[in-house]
Image (cartoon, rainbow, N blue to C red; front, top):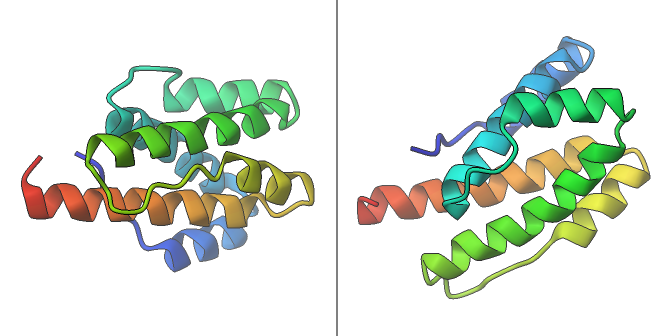
Length: 121
């Protein structure tokens, strides 16, 4: 089950904890994206670990792949509007706005969770 998360609260907690909460948020989003797409890819813990080891470069790759997975999840659920925002997520991250990418990803996950709740998937 994909959890709807309060994006504003996640951003505030990420700022207050100097980015520590954002690592937890990243792990949760990675697991939720895998669940939404119906794929068991890299787990949330592995995404965080690889992102730390590569000084953020793996995080950019993950954001691109997340755009594809969200599009796949939306297509599988027959959303009227399907988006593939992987490039947007990467561009925002490269200019230092990863938190905005996280917020956009979480927004899409919240829409999928809402859809699943309404349709009991």
